Amino acid sequence: MVRKNSERQFINWLTIVFLTMPHLKTGFWGQFGTLDLMIDIWRLLSFFIVFIWYFFVWRRVSRIVVLFFVAEGYLMINTMIHGGNLYDCVKAAFSIMAVALLYDMLEGFKMEFLEAQLFCFEIVIYINLFTEIAYPDGLYQGTLYSANWFLGYYNTHTRYFIPALMIAYIYKDYTGKKMRIYFLTAAIFLSALLVWSGGTIAALGIMSIVYIFFKNRTGIFNYYNYWLIHLVFFVLVIVMKLQNYLRWFIDGVLGKWSSLTGRMLVWQAGLELVGRSFIFGYGVEGDEARQRHFLWAVHSHNQLLEILCQGGIIYLILMLMIVGTAGKCLGRNRSSETVKVISIAFLGWCVHSLVEPYITSFLMGMFIIAYHSQSYVKVWTKGIYGENVRRQGRIG
Image (tube, rainbow, N blue to C red; front, side, top):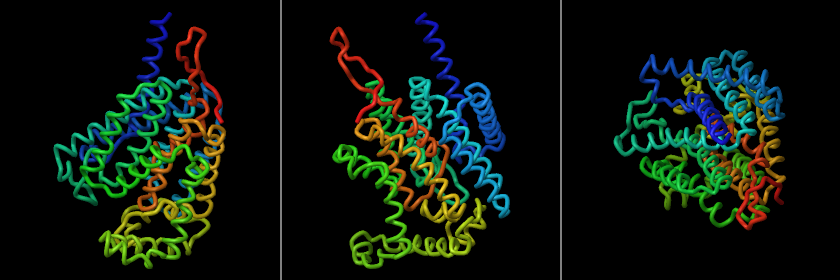
């Protein structure tokens, strides 16, 4: 019986890995036409398998999944109406929906889910670290930037690192196993340092400080307050430009004024763009169209501004509903270790997305994990013979 259970768990694990890996596709594969196409086909196949599994076998639809479909459907329709880059929009939407459906179903297969996701992230992150060590000046020539490694341009690495850290520390809390987690954490920090990604280092550094010193002060350091960082930054920095009063420090001490000036020009262009279509935005546009709007950039360098550019206030409301739905579930166990870890992962995303906007499948998958956070909460209790026994329970 034990052997059959083990075999079933391995098959479940293998299936999850098969359905997950194509959505971890990076720009590196774009150099190889046939292989790149095969991975895209694999990704599409993954979506259809998950879709059929979810709606015809699982047959339970979570509220947050409905919000995902409405948000992504609206963005695709908006992109079509505005004559935008529908191909990239559809690819991203199908990948996001596939991961959302998969994560929602796998709430019932927690051990296999955590093991499989951790394995998938370990594969791509360790390969990326190897490429950074072996090719310090970049693994390949990108279309926009010269320094690209297995996970692409260094600013994009965060969209893999943050979900990986969330999964890893939930796994540690759920199983009590630590060594793989510590190795992965070290690899992520080393990866950021080797390519000196300022935004990634800042996000990881702030996550570490909060995790070590402030995670128990949930009255201030909590999921909702982390998202408020976006609003404060948007109003004070992008709209009111209060950073001009700190030029003496930014320029004289940090020497970063010239870099900030470029982003300020992009933010101003983004504000003007939003002002002309505040309700609906412009859909997902191609790189050439974005560069006409944002001078040298292909995005607005701020997540809130990017949401408004792509889908206007309608898309923003849908995203806020997703944030709120996940947050309501997290609030039920705010004092638990697992919920603190999940919330701190969102803190990292919030910090980095102040200057780099990313809405990708695994970042969005974090909302599904947050939605089901209660089922990952574990309480250590003493069994009838005195040994440690884990049981599922509500905390706080």
